[in-house]
Length: 126
Length: 135
Image (cartoon, rainbow over the protein chains, first blue to last red):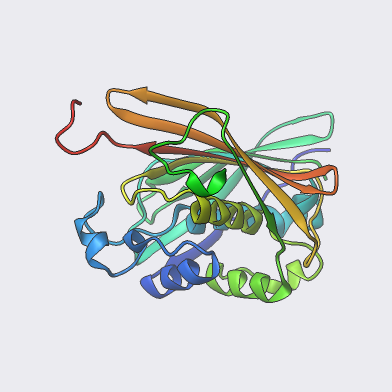
């Protein structure tokens, strides 16, 4: 099959969303929240969880492939830049190749200026 | 064994085992935080939630210094995981190295249902050199 287009997912990640992710994603690291540790930390202010940014790419793939994403999806990414809330993030998954039923996509999550926050690849076997 | 582990004493070959079950309420909470439509995930656990909770399980057992950065992430779904399905998680340390005073570590986390590997996550982290240390 030809790799179908994947609709991008855009969302504003604000501090309330980061705080919610800290609770429900089970990552309470204070560098993600309005804490003294965040302002004294490596980024000098709170930074969104990388896994929260990456969740948009997973959502985009799930939106196109549904259950097949849960059954066979892979992601391999590296974070490129920190995401400081509030930030408008767009996840784009672009068809790259198809071989023996395995569909491969280039993945990028970028800020409003188009700067990549993470890049990598995703595969799925629908 | 795992109770004594710290990031500083971590060694290649260390194994961190634990049990994990993702409840429907946890899925609902996670999706409320990420903003994804929960309708899609009534009978399967979102793959990235599995990875996030495996990282959380690691952090509960191996205290990681605040300055450690999560630099890379891989996930590999072998089949859908059902809400409430009991999983045995086994995290190993396949790579651990020093470069210019920084520590680079990789963790590989497998989730098993019985003997079946259903999900794999690989996590790369980097700990910068200690302040005042040799760069």
